[in-house]
Image (cartoon, rainbow, N blue to C red; front, top):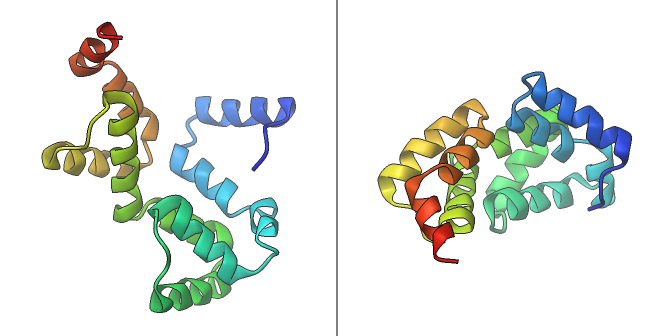
Length: 143
């Protein structure tokens, strides 16, 4: 909910260049005390926010209760990573990048393939491959 400070931005760039996965970085942000504080340090509100941000939907009561309990049993970073790396979240990220870069919905084969690639936390590979595709190039020429 804020812009990066210069030293923080530089730090996270070095982490990515050093091999940290986007998934791990996202989990560190989503599970950070600063992010949790945005929700008043209320775990149920934080979980509901993760549902909206990462799954693009509201939580069901059972799911909300489960994740609140998991946060108490483990920690926010662990829960954030599991949310970010869930099949539902990976598919939502694939769909969003297809829409943003290719201007269309995913096809089933592409969504299956790329959501599997994202299981390794490699969101940058998806963006790079879509941006390097003939389809993206053709779309860019029409602008």
